[in-house]
Length: 76
Length: 387
Image (tube, rainbow over the protein chains, first blue to last red):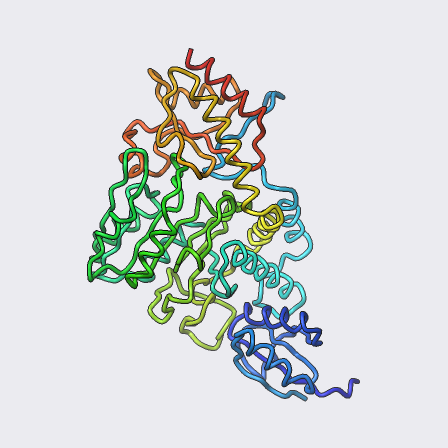
């Protein structure tokens, strides 16, 4: 079992989620597109999951590229 | 089917053949991916969503816009134009267009004139199909909301002055909707430089993708709060709500998209972006010039439109003295294996402007893959037919 703490960022639309994956990949930030945990949201089917330590750099990258996020949630 | 070579000169209707990779990418999607993009969270659904996103992103590269999220996919340019017109114009709005439009513009406009109380001004073009931008400017009133313009005629291939018209629209605070059905992929269109607010495109002509995908690129100046989509439905987003999302592209994309079409379109755009639009345009100019030169030497051939309009797309219309266009088309196909389109080409307005209504014309539409041999053979065929 991993001892990394995860967070997820959800988006209003799949397009935005894919865009976010593209942006993070380009900057070498490790993220994974995963189904949105049901207890987090019923918004579009996929979100990005990442190590909590990368939260700030991801938010900064998405903000820079004008990718709107729906929510950021720390998950267990 | 004979084993004589067939010559496809109907690229203005749809392009064929497609470049290498298009059929393969579509096949790969059906066989190896197959999923519904973005609805489900599993790896194939994500892969399908990536394909659609990549296609959006390549459309933005072709037309120099910034946000792939503002590329709305639908069936074709007709759907894109319907969205631009019906989504934005309201009763009392005045819209200006030209005398060289395709029915994908004229029919929605005439319908909205009848049912929704919009006012339409059609700016007359010259008998060779040219539009004077100053003439268009003189038709602007305080009620004018939008100009909708064809970028190049599907009947005679001449370009309309869309860049100048875009500038006029920007100066007068009007929205500019451009129909790129005949230019997308083979003539440079730049949403920023040309001041285009809504760009309708179709995947299956010079964008070299399959039929069934096209749409509208919605520029930053269009207020999506006031934009009414053509349909509502499931989008895989805000699923807890029964109201339709208000953000792009979901606002205008209800239901499962044409993912296999997006895969094919992406492959077509890969080819175009690697060859470059400039190279494609240059080559097609050479080809159409050769064809026109050959045809000009045939006494009974009457070329329609401007024989030397400078830059153009590789489409030309003509008639043969004493023969109906339908007869010419049939003989070209039956006796020589040359395929083309005859009649009014869904553009009765253009034919009225050019003086070829109601009989219509024979139309040749070349592509980047047309060869000099095919052109010479066609000229020879025309000599024989017109004899």
